[in-house]
Amino acid sequence: MHERSRLLADESIGKLLFKLSAPATIGMLVQALYNLVDTIFVGHALGENSIQGIAGIAVSFPIMMIVMAIALAIGIGASSIISRSLGENNLNKAETTMGNVLSLILISSTIITLLGSIFIVPILKSFGTTETIMPYATDYLSIIIYGSFFFIFAMAMNNIVRSEGNAKVAMYAMIVSAGLNIILDPIFIFGFDMGVKGAAIATVLAQAVGTLYLMYYFISGKSMLQVHAKHLKLKKDIVTETLAIGLGPFSRNASSSLMIIVLNNVLAIYGGDLSIAIFGIVNRLFMFAFMPMFGIIQGLQPIVGYNYGARNYDRVKQSIKLSIIITTAMSTLGFLLLFIFPEQLFSIFSTDQQLISSGRDATRIMVMAVPLVGFQIVGASLYQAIGKARPSFILSMSRQLLFLIPFVLILPHFFDLWGVWIAFPLSDSLSFLVTLIMVLKEFKILNRMEKASLAPDPI
Image 1 (tube, one colour):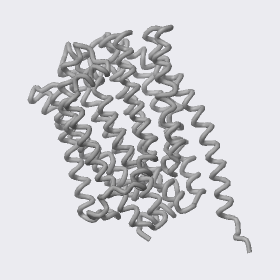
Image 2 (cartoon, rainbow, N blue to C red; image 1 turned 180 degrees about the horizontal axis):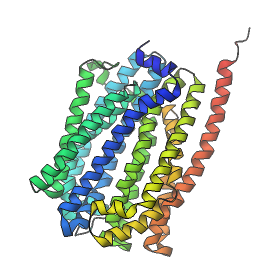
Image 3 (cartoon, helix red, strand yellow; image 1 turned 120 degrees about the horizontal axis):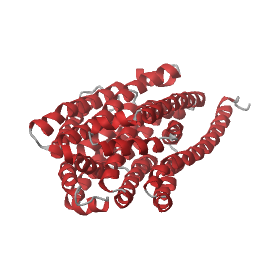
Image 4 (cartoon, rainbow, N blue to C red; image 1 turned 30 degrees about the vertical axis):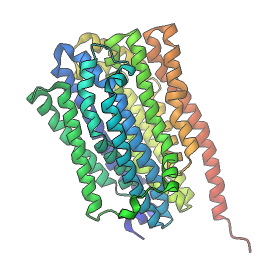
């Protein structure tokens, strides 16, 4: 048995979760930090036009979310198959899956780059971009779109690396790209006086370097998985299972993109450029608060996937329970920071007093149910890891599409701009209830499966 497989099977859950999730959490925090830094540098570089610059990046974000959604659909779907295949000692299926991932990355990134570059203006208009925001949004997105291959490759392959239990390599890849982005941002934004274009160039270059790092890892033979030309040929069963499992995370990120599009259009009506900029900042603060939880999940999934494939259901339950405790503590801490210090956080992005004061009030409303988010994230990830596509899809869709978007469309008719902000805690609360019901049901199934696996064979 390979050493990393032995750890997934036998290491104590607490130590194993820490080993796998700590590097992922650090990497995700650094990743979230450079998303913040992009906006901070642009906000200060543009001075009196900071609201329009920040809003320009905000309205471009749905495209980046769609790219992330595709990358996660491929990466998480495939990593679930690979984890379970390794647990079943089926190395050939694991390597074939990885080869199919590479082909899917190339196909999807090519399509995104072509369509995005051709239809950039109508896309941005549909995203709620106003005339004053449009120049900044096109400057940023026209460059970002050409980096689609690097974004998708890095995000998808990071999940593959984690599926074989090598979380440190994924962490290093994220730190390398994020750290380089933070270094390049001021050089291109201030040094070359390129504004939002400089932020975009820095981001694409940083992702390209992260991609090269991951390519080196696989080519050098350090991975458990070795891909040959025969593995690149798409196989219907593997592609179908990958996309079915990946439908959950794809839907979550795609619905986030749709949510941002709807919000930007509604905010353009009820609050204009200022409210779009506020949401752009809050959304990045949310990402920074939530990213550590996704780091825990990325450590959790190979543990659950491997042990579910090996029919060790007790370890599956232990890892889920511990992850719920940790992510709930993290989401509670995130709530406290955002609720107590919103003014200080907004002042990092801009010196505009109207932006700071309006942002403070909006943030305190939006974060009221954030302590419930950690449980939601673990619940959806449970189903991804064990290969149950339909419940994963339902939980991934619940917050954004089933609750948040309808509330955002309905509540402003009664509460004006405040209705948009109120929609967030309401949707989080309802999504929590749906997740709780489904996870309790799944634990009953796991208990029955565990009893069946421990029962003596009939004579």
